[in-house]
Length: 405
Ligand SMILES: *Cc1c(COP(=O)(O)O)cnc(C)c1O
Image: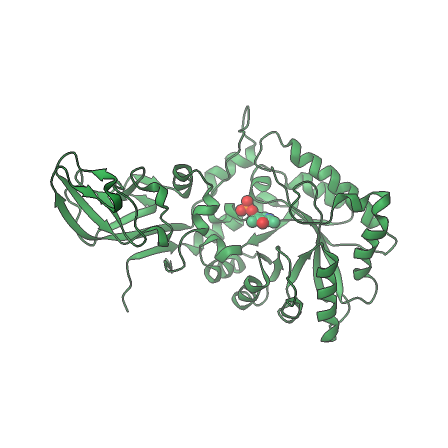
């Protein structure tokens, strides 16, 4: 069946190029785990997981056990990490699908251990990434547990990795909450706290030697922090694993506040090499001429000051074209910017093509991507909506077809 023309085009080869570039940027310090949560940031999990594998990526990161099951099907031999942790009753699926999982609550470790023992899983067969809360106050073992007073509670967690347990302390992880702040001060204090926590795990007397130190999203990687994180890891006999998301999809995070002087060379390099993986398109469904005085869209928020030529497009807020963009954003038709006029509807929107007389029914309209000399990026959408490009990508509706090109 032919489709309603509202689709995204995914370039798996660009994803592969981005992965290889980032991998080289991290080398020889860190390996990479490709974050493909939320349907690969809206890009399509299957396409991106396959592209990651082709590019030599050994690790995928997803939010949930449900996403882990989907990632396992798409990439049978990859190591798949569930960064959001398992929920009650999900241990069985973690074991069955050979997922690694982040954990920090005693009940999570109990759930995993019980599920693993129930199927007679062999010692150390379930990889756990113990998350430490080094300052974000979101998830992870509280830092107090690494003080003297917390020793008993910390050991209560660590005994789950004792000799003969089906759980293996595969990694220690933390999340940086300000890696896009140029001065790096918050990140540095998080890393210092992490260092202390690692020493504490080492001296627990349980003989735990986690292989990986799992730290650092796109911003940390593209600003060149692989060496710093690898240094910290090496001090504890560990290897560094970094976990970029956004940069794999071709966008460089914005640094706010920005760098005062020269940007780090890694960042300049990343800007030059990373390319967007996704374009978002629709087509003109219908054209009409309206006289001066005509009202356009719900509540007539736009009134034509002169005769206008309007194009109806098959994209609305249910597709992810944010409603705030009505009357304040333009899309591309025939390589030119055509303003969105009136309110965006759930399934449709109207653009002004008065200045683009060659526009005709069936013409391609670009929401994200390039046409002729002009480009609209997810960052442009985000700025116009007062949000971040992560939210724009993940807001592209599930009914929008993901097409490999
Ligand atoms: C989403 C996420 C990432 C990836 O972040 P980017 O900024 O997109 O690179 C890494 N780690 C965790 C824990 C995340 O939730």
